[in-house]
Amino acid sequence: LEHKVIRLKIPPLYDFTESLWFLDRNLDDCMHKVLGDKARKMVTLDNKNLLIEISSEKNDLVIKVLNGGPVRDSLVIGYVDEWLDYTRDIRPFYRLLENDKDLSALAVNFRGFRVVGIPDLFETLCWCVLGQQINLEFAYRLKRRLVERYGTALNYEGINYYVFPSPGILKEVPVSELRAMQITTRKAEYLRGISALFDNGSVSKKKLAMLRSEARMKEELIKIRGIGEWTANYAVMKSLRGMNCIPYGDAGINIALNRLKNIPKKNNRKEIDSVFNNFEGWKSYLVYYLWRSLRQPG
DNA sequence: TCCCAGGGGCATC
DNA sequence: GATGCCCATGGG
Image 1 (cartoon, rainbow, N blue to C red):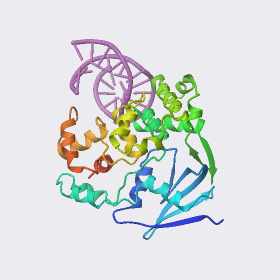
Image 2 (cartoon, helix red, strand yellow):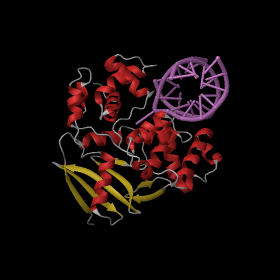
Image 3 (tube, rainbow, N blue to C red):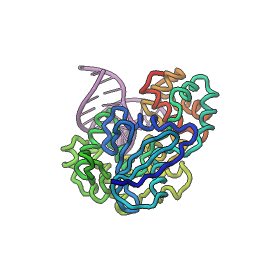
Image 4 (tube, rainbow, N blue to C red):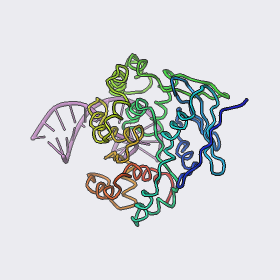
């Protein structure tokens, strides 16, 4: 069977194995699958569901469309870039890292690591709500339950790939049904509320993107019940590609900066800012590298 | 038993 | 604006 194949030249400071590491990292994320040195994911482009596979060969990033389509190459390429952020020139970020003696090891240890995005804003926000104040493993389990029940599946070579449930479907799910999945009453209410806002069009990625300013995007998001400062920053970073997003209060950031810079783990907003102020334009990347540092001994 | 997890809302001062 | 409490489950 012949598949559509797109080859893209890999730019400096992009390492696909780092993207793969993030996509795998021992967490059971139902929205993609890592098989050896390949990643597979179902994506919706031009109202069509496509199963795509990403791998690397020599100096190329290789995209195969395994199922679905056809859609224009540019749509597929655009999606992969939103997902893996591979075309961004991150050399300026590396110069900033290298100028900081406590952080310069990050540029060596995680060379070529990029922010892995979640192009679907609705999915991002639901994911944030699900994961609030519980451990990651359990959060991924909750997401899997939600997606398996209300999402759209494609079975390919014995594995199910999913499109995240639509707002129209989730807004109608009774709280009791979500409660039965161990999603708390509060979270169920948040999910239904966010779903309704996306379903009636009052909130959308397109509308937020048109605001241009990250600060204004966050401002709009925080108005939504269930979305606080942490989630607004996370969502703008992961879905709208904001470059100056700091999820203040994040436990992982606190631990990483405590290790690397001996900064207190609580009431540390000013200390956090004093570090991040040197990374104007790359704050989100620093957040990501700090998270990255938690999972592998420096 | 305790504390903590890639939080957020709300009441209170 | 800071602080304390609640939610609600699992892991260490």
